[in-house]
Length: 133
Length: 379
Image (cartoon, rainbow over all chains, first blue to last red; front, side, top):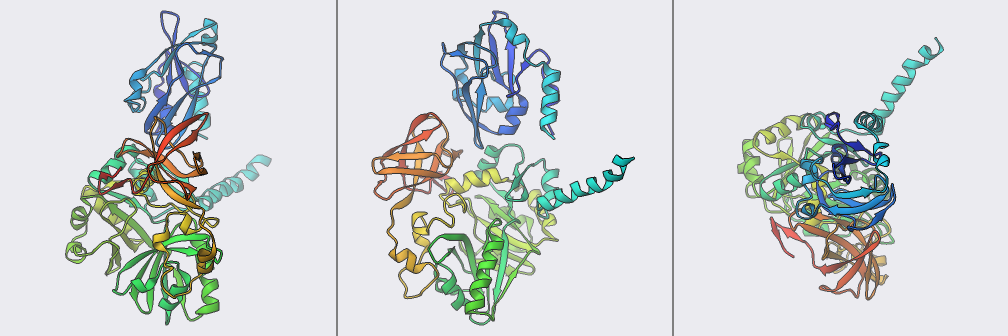
């Protein structure tokens, strides 16, 4: 049933089901994974962190809310919020239809090496598979 | 060697536990074949959605959808004096039921006025009333009914019809599609007014529902329900999961047992005064408590003025004291969050209240519900 075996190989992942993309300008883009959107169901509301907010790794910083439930998003690394995807305000369902394009916020990490230390696709896949049992 | 000896018995135990843990309706395989996401719903393995809860919600408001509600329990109460017993057992008055097939919504109360369950009772004849109760409360309801009947009407037979299944077909096109799926049903059921039912061979067709749309609830033998489900599907009726069932009933302003009321809440504080007959001379279980207890709280509708989603148990702050959301969700029809909330009686329609949503206070407006009826927003 799950499509999670099509995980993009270029992304990094967290145990709390965010995906992280390293951009060329040194920022990172963050969204939620296919697995996470499947669990949550139809999205109706996204609350993003304020631009400029300083975040510690694993700090609660955003909320993705579906008809069924609200899920917290966590900062994947320590850094500052540099942008949010305001498009999701009117079209939160983009997270359901294309979770790896529907980014939620961007950060400038304090330490680029923190991003490299996150899970790769294979490690995240193992985590998802273990949660299914 | 040692491991091998225990392997088989343990495996067997595992499967046995699985089967015992989650009950299945006769449509379980059909749900899975249709791609349902199944969830544990009060001990039943039930479909949450078949892809998108929002699409299913709109399908019922705009066209027609079908729900497997076979987990709900049908009871038949038969015998001499059954009407008289129900007059005493139920908070609503079965004397309102005078023509065969007529239905009545009622609460089943404890003597302190707490709600044991809400149900629909159908008058069939003076020797037979049919009652449909919630799944999670069914066993408790039956025990209570038997206890009351033993003391008051021991001649009555109360039968739990576990051999029956139930499908709800709801939506503006529900009737037209039911006629297609069930040849011969049109002649029989077209003239049915809301809250009336008719028996037809092994089927029981009631013009009732839990969505605020036209439609039917059909009780039929568990053995034939898969064939009927398929026929409805072939007629263009889409399967709808419990997720959309909840948002549909909330928009329709219909109470959900265990959320909007339970044994600690009386019906007058759950927006159900219209279902309690305090006018007639009749005595019924819970009447004394309802008449003597002060009514401090009431159920109101809330519409969130800010972005976000209201959820069950969030605290509502008003100028007259605090209340609590009993059912909160997102309304797909209104495209904003709505809720039912129990608040101090002094709160008025049109008031603005504050709801504690996580770390924020969000403004909500107090409104009369239902929020949606027959596909149209009323707010």
